[in-house]
Image (cartoon, rainbow, N blue to C red; front, side, top):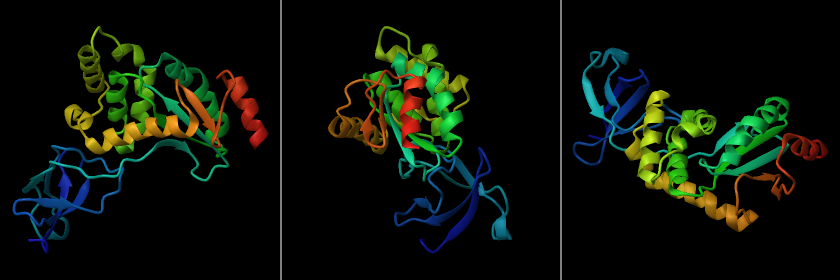
Length: 239
């Protein structure tokens, strides 16, 4: 019955959500959650007891599918004067070095001060990077944290003689880091897959990206050697 609504909460984390009847018998819908809400496939919903309409703790549903908008991984003020786009591949060692040596200084001096916003876009160079990119987009409210962890621990999971070995290392890494992600559902999510592929297609089409990392500053390709000194000189001219 589409007219029925039930106050519920997620067993895993206590997230409150209102469940309503679906058009198909046996199906329910959870609507009006923000795109960064911490809800995942296989989460169990129980009655929250809110409003005392139903007693607390009755099993209601299990999440089988999530239709949430895939959003860009960003850091900084949305209205910043300067926007940096970083095209990266998660198995690229130069990209990991950027996150280790350049990004922390950039964040401290320009991003945290509201002068710069950075967008991390995907340009996977191999299947392992493609899967990792999808993983980074699968937990919307933790995407930046996951992305940074994948780069800072790249040597932990990017190893093996086959894609299968790298994938298994990635799965194990996510578990050890405490990222509660349904790996198979995530890498097989068509919406996320299209999002990652479109990043690569648009990078090639709009900015002639052919290697990683490639930096775009206010829609202009950064052609100098990528180090903090050169990046800072360019940014100072734009402030």
